Length: 285
Figure 1 (cartoon, helix red, strand yellow):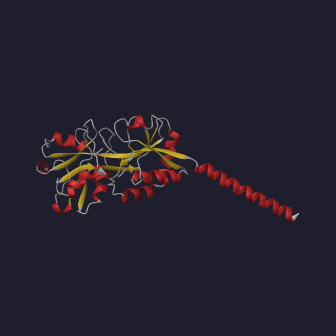
Figure 2 (tube, one colour):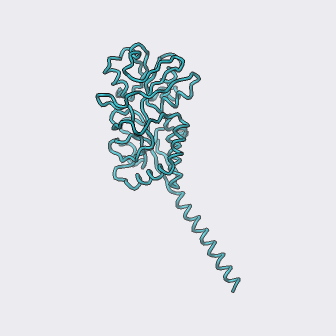
Figure 3 (cartoon, one colour):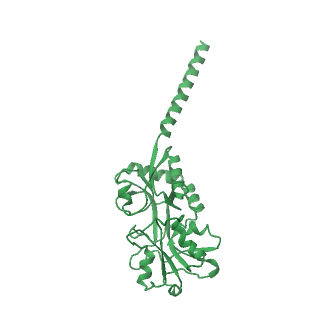
């Protein structure tokens, strides 16, 4: 009888282990389908070197899933060509308030920043600083349609135009990481200051031998409603509240890891108490 009991217990243990392994196999087969740009550091690339790649891995691991990418260049119509085309289920970084998507609670907030050589001691803080009228200012021009970022509109409103130098972000043949050329120009003294989206400034400034200062542009919102600071979240298809809730729960559980990734990539994070703005006018992530 004792032998039979032992055999029964052993069989039960074997069955339990088999069920556990089976459950893990089912769990690990889940895919988190993410759309991302294949060449857009510091955000993402096909080598998985961007901070959005790292965040996608974090969230997928928390959900016991594996990331499966659909690589789509982030241009006009990005949502239409990704979520709406069922190419994926998640966009890893979208400003809250973006149209045609359902966004999670934000996991960081950043802003446009001044980037200038620390040794020049410019002490720039505001676009109303009279010094900007005589400095060579670098700005990104976004997209083939010539769309410009909020700082371009704000400077134009102040009549600061002739001393502005435009830099393209996309598809510069033979140039690695064209998004960072504007920061190279600051370090090489081709321009005096760049005004760029914070994550771009923070990341590429860290890769320069010249010591560069990263200073948030103040105020967060221009008097005519042009925003400079944005809450950034993950996005899913409209109506997919279940996946949104899953992502929010994972982001909450891994919030310290998320913060560490942002710090590692030099992303300037501003207070969540700063004035809120919609996604209108944000030309890049």
